[in-house]
Image (cartoon, rainbow, N blue to C red; front, side, top):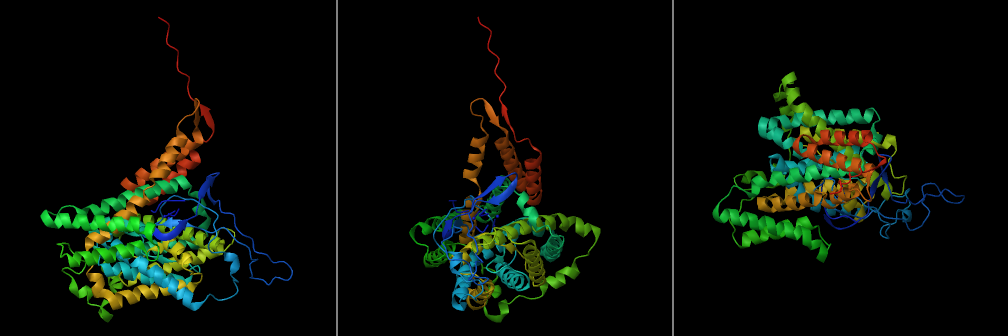
Length: 508
């Protein structure tokens, strides 16, 4: 994703969510027999005589290192490497993590997530505060109900991209019913114990999904950057470009703070100091950013659930969008869970029961978010990796993340309102360009190119699945693109074959 998913990134270049500074790149998902498997060599827990249960034998372990994007979406090249950072073997898993370290880790993740949560709200066409409260409510409820310790959930591009056209064409009132319907599908997915289906999504299908997602994110920002005239147009483009460059280049200088946060702060300060003619979040909507208890969420979603008639016509409108949201949310959340499992030196995959509880928590969090007027989200691979890199190991870090984001908006709403809209567009464009799998797609094309008069039909099948998933995800629907990619991976021949010999020209 970080597959970097949302997202969903997935050594890689920065991509969902989504290049987080300071996070090295480790995850390599590769296909073996069509299944997505981890190449990470996992440390083993020892229950030798004399070693207490729950204590992992102390040895240096490979560590998941990945450059991730802060979008919350899965993205990036998938590459596992053995490293020497955090060693899960040094942790007695029967002991509670240090409270201070957990809370500070949650604060770091929250600061990195505020700009992208606001940007996702902008894509959906709703109030910026809805993006933040969506992350807060989902993060807290999903963790409390069934979240995996250390996993971060929040607003994600894979959710808002399919929601945006629905809101634009039918109004925000349709948002809550769609999110609730998607949550019911997620709950059913867990109840039917379908968690292992995530293994059907191969690396190349995931790259195709990320290509489509990245292009959709780029398209969503064009309306923000284009259509103006004169000084306003020039200033908007300049602020967006400046922000994107800071996001891209700052990690090469320092990783002390999240690059997207630093970029937005610098762009806001410079725009104010130079009095640039750029629109801000609070412009025309100052009451929303008054701060204090007035910015707390309301039960607006409950009213929307009753305002929309639950008829066959309504279901025809919201059902395809809900299916897309549910499928992609399940995929990215289970991949994030897999990251946590590997960081904990387990078997590289959460147990089926754990996945089912995780999906139940995700469904409950999305229902709660929708009831409070939010658009929900899913598990975030980039933020989960950032949490682990910052020392977060338990559920307390996820609770700290949600509480810190809520505190930011209550205490600093006026400051958030001063953020230029163009700077958020710059963040999302940086995320979007990094999400598109240029290197991975190029490598797939080269692998499918015939060498020595022979086709590598397995590589050709992978390339066809990648390109088909890319095109369908962008032009039709993201869930349909993934389903088509998986189907093509299964049905296309994968043996080697020779190129047809060229007929020799008749001699003159």
